[in-house]
Image 1 (cartoon, one colour):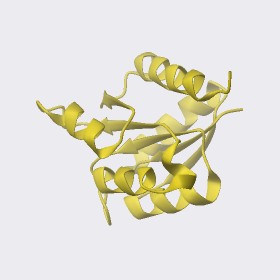
Image 2 (cartoon, rainbow, N blue to C red):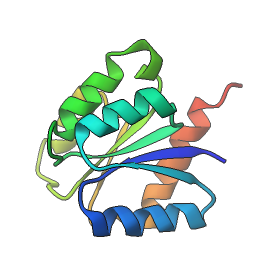
Image 3 (tube, rainbow, N blue to C red):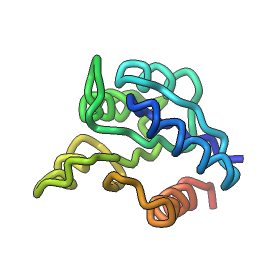
Image 4 (tube, one colour):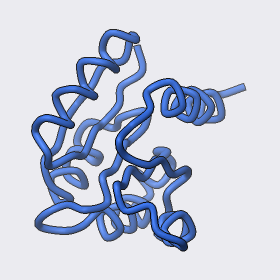
Length: 125
């Protein structure tokens, strides 16, 4: 069962997305701020991270850069999630080290296609 770390400070979004992912067969870990996301990534070695970009303590951009700067967590795919779909946000996410980008409100089927594609790339051949 693939393990996904959901880093999301909004309780309603976190609970809703966690339940929907679990119903699809994923094990979901959660973090409520960027620092907790960095710490859980290191401690729990998830298969993929869904990273909200607007987070307290450290934002999703900085948290992703930290995760991608450490050998132990560098290979974990990160999908940026943001409600601020402004021009340049996708590029900013990729520059921070994200492997993909999706907008909120989350369209579950679209997000699942991205999750499955990144998990398939991560599997050893």
